[in-house]
Image 1: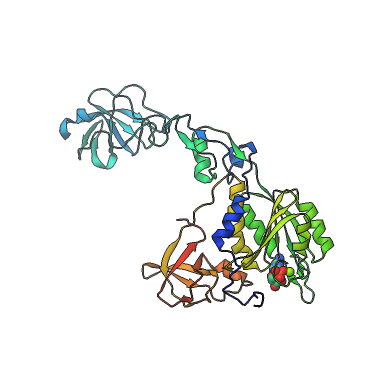
Image 2: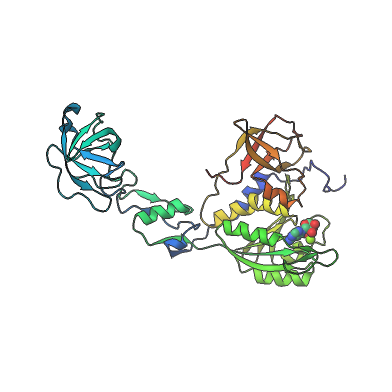
Length: 413
Ligand code: AMP
Ligand code: MG
């Protein structure tokens, strides 16, 4: 039998996506080095140790509404008229206990005076000078926020391994904390390979193209919260690659693109191998079939394919979870939706496709359409898409109206 070629779909020697992911993850150990950083520097970092709350939030009983704080029993079932004894504003509380038969004008977030147990919304009272009647009998305790009803002092606020986003940084700030222990940033050296590549800003000669992978990769690495080290464009010669790997091998991770396909002038593989131990995988995935993984020096090495969409897909499937693990956090579990397709999706059986799609609302229902041409060089498809359409290994495509699985790129409101 001939060796498998790029046109073969069913390749018995190919690794499944999950198999490859498992092999990668099992060879990684999380970084154990922590550093303390100021809160503003903590965004996107991974918490190195559990953080317990030292304050109740809210710290004092406060009002959830603009209205009047009062003693429920004083309402006499709604028949009583109360006096207005003063005002409690956020940051400027009413001082002293609530007098009998009185209410206190209160603003949202202001401290509820001692003796008051209920807040009535301002829309539900009639105020006449210094006297107040309630028009709807509240239940006792209404619109009073208890101390600690958000966070209780002593409770686990955030666990080690939590990636710090805006809400987490806000939570730490609400505790009055000014710095936090985070895992050291993973250092990732990266470079593009290819004699045809020239950097942005340089005019193209015959047969040359601008290097886009290094820019895509840079963004992907920033999103992962790692420290990128850009080693530039490396030519397809053993000498140039040797120099690049020599420089890269002291990082935690090395990522290259290009030069790992079958039949390539594959110096990436042979040079990298001199620096460590490598595995060459064909993965049952499209795009992104060839993947090289292993070690160069002490660094973990990912040799990604050269085509720009393959870079994005293999990074998401294999590099991002690895960087998460090294950073001490678990990869986020992607949201998977099943929706009807608005386009015919063509596919040959054999590999799992991550096609680019646009998830949108049609007649009040979520549905997905294709971005069009699915070649692994069509980087514009990644930009237009807001999701992957995942078509399983045995799938032969999908007709309009069929249900398909999609993974949205980002889940925001
Ligand atoms: P390779 O895996 O090196 O054979 O590259 C596969 C295809 O991707 C070729 O058409 C390359 O020109 C293209 N390619 C490789 N690296 C880059 C890059 N850094 N930016 C844009 N295209 C690239
Ligand atoms: Mg190449």
